[in-house]
Amino acid sequence: MYAIAVDVGSTYVRCGLVNPDGNIIYSFRMPSKDVLTEGEIIALINAAIRKCAGVADRQVLGVGIGFPGIVEHNIILGRADNLPGFNNVNLGELIHSSTGLNVVVDNDANMMAWGEMKYGAGKDCSDVVFLTIGAGIGGSAFIDHKPYGGYRNKGTEFGHIVINFDGPACSCGSNGCFEAYASARALIKDYALMTGKTAAELNGKIITKNYVDGEAAAIDVMNRHFNYVAVGITSLINIFSPQKLVIGGGVSDAGSFYVQEIRQRVAKRMMPDTFDSAAIVHSQMANEACLLGCASQVFSTPLLLQSNTIMDI
Image (cartoon, rainbow, N blue to C red; front, side, top):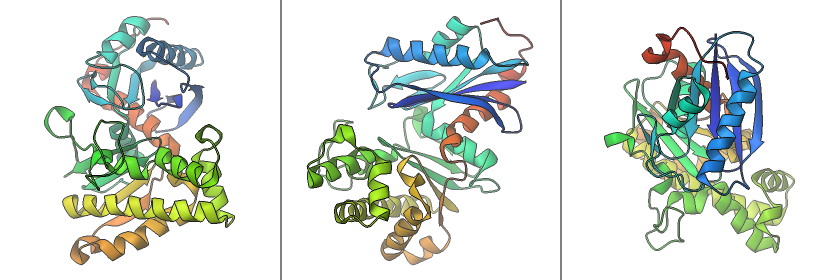
């Protein structure tokens, strides 16, 4: 059997067909950056699921969706900062009604964490903190082998740790958040201001390539970025003292230098005893972590395992 996995982002909706061994049999992505309404996002998710189901040559057990918002029992309680709408929306029920498939929905960073715990960098660990550095900053934590999200799954908003109360405005409505300083969006903004380019013509890959090539502007903004990321990670390790802190997301995929630079900076700030027991590592599953986490939750959810049939879609 298969699971359909959907990773909803502000730039792309990614979808994959996954088997129980964690092999992604088929995957693709659909642009979402020009989508303007909540309804259009839901329609895009439905279209992705139908496209994926259309190539399945065996039973589809269900759909797992990673969504960038506060999620409880398949309901989006709080909208994502980078997507329109989604306040108290039962996304699971809407997708089930449209497709006839059983659905499990969770925060995208939580789904990434499940993927890494099941198949990647968190395997065989009990206590792990995950950080995703993309357009925003997301996070998740496993404590004693179990995911921890605070009351009603509203916690572990690591991107909104305040690192400077008098800092720049954040998309969450506060000021000086970790995300406002260290996200890919913040990196692009800094580079655009320094070079006179527009943010629309830039992305993290361009900046990190220029950094590797030795461009002065890229080196300057990347060094600031590394420092900002190190400040946030220092706080997370001091709080959780995990076995591993796993970094994922688009910017972090630039190369091995990324984690090395951050590790060196964190080492200078950490409480020594805490740092000695916490390894800072890169995601092993990279961009596939969220899809694999979504699939793992389909295969491990009792309600879905009891289902023997699905509706044709």
